[in-house]
Image (cartoon, rainbow, N blue to C red; front, side):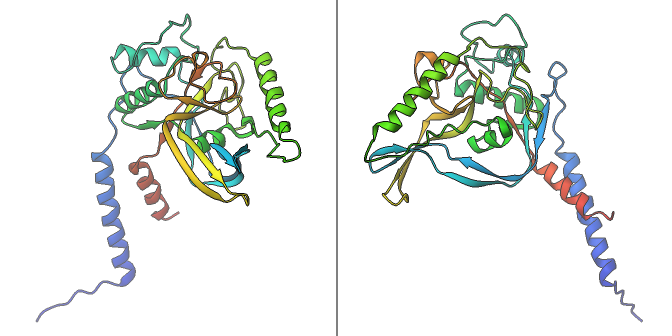
Length: 295
């Protein structure tokens, strides 16, 4: 006489869940990142919680043939942002150069605790690729929106506040002239040791100091109609957004911003960078498994 085994639905669900978790755990063990090289300490990072922020969009906007401020919109950052607390230093960058994965800087800094400056967009992405290989983690430049999110109260909205005025179109030009003159007089280009400009509310140092930071956001040129609706958008990934005391657009191969390559306005004092750490699928899977476990 045959016997039929029937499992109650809760037991079946529990068994299937355990099997799934066991399989996931095996995958996690098989895909653990390789150990960090002994001479390479992991960068200090801060985690910025998801939020919705008011953000001045990047890009160059014009309406009726005249430049206007970019729109101020609500932007949702939907997942935690893990970003370096400090900019990549001279000592950090030198390790990549020694490994043959990064180009040498044009001038050698006297101190290793200074931010690495005189780096192009390509230099920054080369370093990110090398650090990713060395740590088994995924590092990349932030987007413009991510940088603004990390900067928090240190983010500077550089809108001019004077959109086209048919009665007096010179008002915007005069406002721009006064702002650029003030920037030039306040310029203090000598790089300072990391941490010199203090930390923001997220524990991230030197945001909007005198080292501007590369992002992965390409230059966008947006044309609006008279009603303010978008007519066309062109993207140029030979030019990238850099963020600091003000937003600037820099040609990707430029190392020294004073030599040219800034599309408009006062050029940055220095070009450097910090990186975002992507949360890999292992981290996301582990977090999901923890949510499935009973409290």
